[in-house]
Image 1 (cartoon, rainbow, N blue to C red):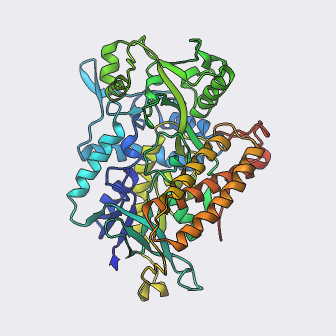
Image 2: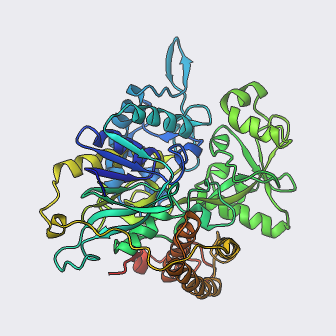
Image 3: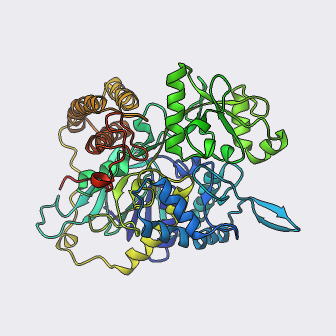
Length: 532
C-alpha cells in the first residue's frame, strides 16, 4: 500500500496547480489515467477571463458572470474568484507563462480578447493555444518537484471511506483504489486529503469538443462514495465545433466571435440579430439554441462562422492553431466561412463544494470542472473556468493545510486490499463499445440542447437497463479502463437525466419545450442529488 499526504486525481490546471502548492507541505501523488498532458485544460483555446485593464472592473466581471449564470450563480463565490484571480495569474507569470502582449503608445500591455457574455475585453490568452501553454508550464514545474509523484496510466476505481469499512462514526475519505494499467492490478493508496480534479463529462454525448479522457470519472466516483452532486442538468454546448467529416472534436474558439466573427445560416444571413441584442456575442446557451433552431428550420447540416472581413495576416497571427487546422481540412478561414455546429463542451454542475473545494464528504475535495462551487450557475461565462481552477486550487490547498485530519478510528487500521473475486477476462469488448455508443447517441438525441419530458423519460428508462447490464459486467469480469469509463459514463448520464427531469422550467442551459418559462418561485435553487 502506498501512502501520501495529498492525492490529486486529474492533471489539468486545477490538479497540477494544487499539487505544486501542496508539495510545499508534504508528499503528493498526481494520478492520471493517460499521460499528464491529457486533460481538458490542454484543449482550451480561448484563455483566462481576468480583470487586468483600467477600463474593466471586478464589479463588471461579477455582473457578467451573474447574468450568464441565469440566477443560479452564487454572488459571494463569484466575487471571491474574480477578485483573487489577478494574484493567481501573477503566479503563473512567475512560473514563466507569458500571455500575449500588444504595443500601445510606446509600452506593452496584455492583448485582451473578448468572448460571449463579456461586457469588456478581459480574456488573457496565448494566441489560440492558451490551455496547452498553461498545461506545459505546470507540468514542467511538476517534474522539478521531488515531493510529487506523477502516476500516469493509473485510473481511480473507487474511494475508500470509513462508512464502507463499517465505522458508524463520521464518514470520511481514507484513500482510493487505483487501476495500474500496465500491471492490470488494482493498488491501494492511502491519504487523508484526496482532491478530485478529473474535469468534465463531454464524452457522455456523441458530439463533443472534449478529449477522450472526459468521461465524468470524478462525479461518478464521488456519487458512489456518497458525496452530494449539484446541477448536472446544466451541460454547456459550445456553439462552434468544426463541422467536417474527418474532423474529430475540434473547437473553433469563441474568441473568433470576439474579434468580429459573424454567425451566418445557409442563406448567408446574420441570424443572431433575431435572437439577442449582443448578436454573435450573446451568451453560449442562447447562441447554441439559436444555431440548433436555424439548423432544424432550414434542414441544413451546419451554420457558418464568417471572419473573412479581417485581414489574413491578423487571422494567421491571432489564431494560428485554428487557421492551420481548418486549412488541413480544406477550409481557408481567410477566404471562406467556417462550417460549425454545437457540441457538448462544459459541465456546469458537478460535485457540490464550497469556494474552497470542500465536498460534503470529509477528507474529499473537488476542484476545477468536476466541482460545482456556485460560480457558473445555470450557464458558464466564457473563459471563467481556467480562472476558477486556479483560484479554488489555491484555496483548497490552504484549507487542507489549515485543517489537519482528525484522529478518526479508521486511520489506525490497515486499509483492505482490493479483492477482485472470482472474475474472468473480458473477451467481448464489442459489448462495451456497443453500450458506450448507445449511451452517447441516446444522450445526444434525448438530452441535448432542447429537451422534452417524453425524451427525458425514455432516456431514463433505457439508462436504468444499461446500468444493470454494466453492473453485471463490472462484478463478473476483470476490470479494465474501458469498463471503468463505461460504468462512469452510465452513472453520469443518469445523473444528468434525473436532474433534468426534476427541473420543471427552462433556465440557462436547461431548455425544455414542456416548461419554456423560468419559474423563480419554485426553481431558483440548486438541483441536489445524493445517495445518502
